[in-house]
Image 1 (cartoon, chains in turn blue, yellow, green):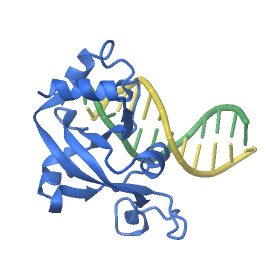
Image 2 (image 1 turned 90 degrees about the horizontal axis):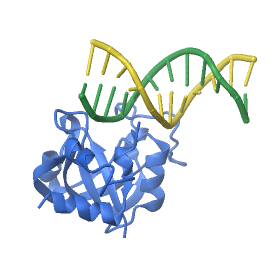
Image 3 (image 1 turned 60 degrees about the vertical axis):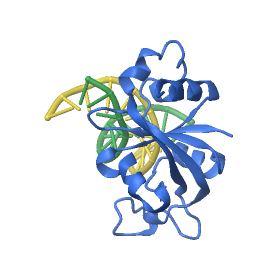
Length: 155
DNA sequence: GCCAACGTTGGC
DNA sequence: GCCAACGTTGGC
């Protein structure tokens, strides 16, 4: 089993939106980066857990935990001309973009802010992809040790 | 709003 | 294959 971190802008879709979704489940559509696509298409497995991370907001940070409940499948929003994430180059016969389904497992009582994570970036969280310089990937892997440390911060 | 960092595109 | 130009991300 693997661990991940998935970014979302709360102004677009935050953890409270997920909590209100049917069965607390949603498809993680709109990812238009090949590396992140590859993680969803090739590496994420049912039962994997991911941190839900709020980005581009007042207080960026990890706000909860989701479970991967459906493995990679074509992102249909790429085929919809009227969708913000439409991509004319994604052919339904040979889809370019993929998504997974995630279900909310837990919302932290308090967010683990990026500032808090940074306090540990040279020690317990050394090497965490999220904290790497210039990192912009919306989906990144998290080691088991880092996972445990961050979950403990939320207690 | 600024800007550093990065990914993608396209000309050559 | 190189690399400049461009667009996007995302923290501040």
